Image 1 (cartoon, each protein chain N blue to C red):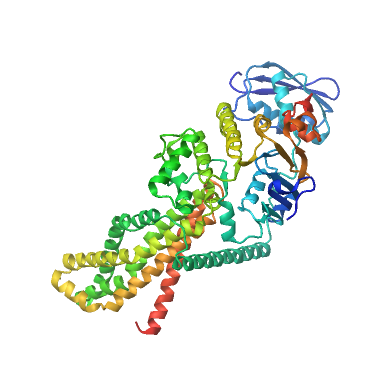
Image 2: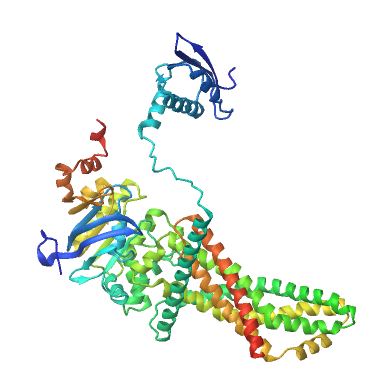
Amino acid sequence: MAESGVFSFEQAGDKRLVIRLGGSWSLQSRLPPVSEVEQRVASASRISFDAGELQRWDSSILTFLTKVTELCRQRQIAMDRSGLPPGIRRLLELSEAVPERKDALRQVTRQPLFERVGNATLAMGGGMRAMLGFLGETTLTFGKLSRRQVRYRGFDLSLLIQQCGAEALPIVTLISFLVGVILAFVGAVQLKKFGGQIYIADLVAIGIMRDMGAMMTAIIMAGRTGAAFAAEIGTMKVTQEIDALRASGFSPMEFLVLPRVIGLTLMMPLLCLYSDFIGMLGGAAIGVGMLDLSWTVYFQQSRNAITLTDVFGGVFKSMVYGLLVALSGCLRGLQCGESASAVGNAATSAVVTGIVAVVAACGIFAVVFYVLGI
Amino acid sequence: MRHNGNENGGGAHFTVHDLTMAYGDLVVMRDLNFAVKRGEVFVVMGVSGCGKSTLLRHMIGLNEPAAGEIFYGDENFTRADTERRQEMLRRVGVLFQGGALWSSMTLAENVGLVLDEYTDLGPAAIREVASLKLALVGLKGFEDYYPSEISGGMQKRAGLARAMALDPEALFFDEPSAGLDPVSARRLDDLILELRNSLGTTVIVVTHEVPSILAIGDDCLFLDADSKAVIARGHPKELLAHPPDPRVRQFFTRGEEARS
């Protein structure tokens, strides 16, 4: 009996119903169903309460009574609360003191398909405009840079160069080596069928130098540095640090975006060259370890397979990728809303935008290089 | 140059003329007109969410007016280009609600950044000036701390030191006592008055702290969210004694009268 809250009914007179409340009401035990009350009150015109056997209570009884109140209001049944303990009465009054704001409740309406498609299209247009605006502003800022009229801290730039250069080496090493290994593996199985193991060196060298080195580095940097840019700038927006910059007469474009774009665009080619080298080492590890080629033969073969044009093509691509990743990171950071979850969204969106831009650019490069015969 | 009818000419440091503020289609305030006299402590008050902070953001160019203009002295701030605006902003300092210190820099670097940018002082001199400003707000010895290493109240004071770095002619405060204990809030009020009295700085404070308003305000503006307009204007003690509107009385008395 004392385990959970109970209630019972007592018919007092013709149309009067007394609800007896007893036991210990607690949120820990289950909430009693109101449906039972619903059936009983149907015939009553007035209800009152008797809380004589009530031992302990908390919000569970308030929730129950609120529902009963709601019920009574709907059916226009008079309700007498004098039988309730004073504490419960006061809390109920408090919860009713400010009337429910009907307009505050969000209308959750399902939009028709066409409306949703239309809204999404309009939003996309707005997003494109914002992106173009950002690109324009960045271009203007670089124009000012060439006239030496920009304000940013040199120390920030060197710190950023360290962050997106040297500090990225371990992860670039790991991924590039594995990509080299995977390329060699995939090729080895096929080439072995007709005894062309030696061409594994060509496959890996050309694949890595022309595309995979730059692309994998760009994807690593999008996940690592692009997200960091967005999160950092987004947080600065939340804490009003960007407002403080603007109020002090500094442009966030010059102060935050410029050093980040310069830092990453400068570091990417170096990372890419490094990644190319490590990737070829990965390929060689398979060639030497599994296919019984000698190191000398493998590297001789690789050297013959690639030209300087391949190398510079890859390095040039990586520079463009670096620019794209840095721009998407900064753009999403500056577009960030003003809450903690907005910062998370900004970081996610920066990575997605960065990777999409990199892969799209990669496709465009493939066509352009083919047409130009490079 | 236009002035509010009841202002006497040359004394106005800031003039807001027919300002309408809006976020998209949502109008916050309509047709605001007021002038802030040089060297006075001007308080913008009102209940939470009435657009006080938005007004401050408009006055320092962080938000663009939907209509109307803001003048710094005789110069039109709203119509000025970016370069000119940045120059005008150098003559004012802003203390944001949470301090908004640049988290990647030490306190001395925070204070020194504008000095480095806008003066010809060398690094040693900048450091000395920064130390002096930090000493003024009671943070001597914390020059090399990062904002994350000090308490919220200290961050706020450091934010004030940064706002004062270039000896601005005017200081803007967004909720200066928010998040401070009563004693620290009182000290900040004293500091604001001291700055005004010794340097003649014009001070514009956005707040809803009644004790603070009564202690420092020379003139104040009461914004009302429902009517999107100013419903009271004048010396705070005057407004307390003779509230022109029941909403103003409620504000000053914490709604006590409405209940009894």
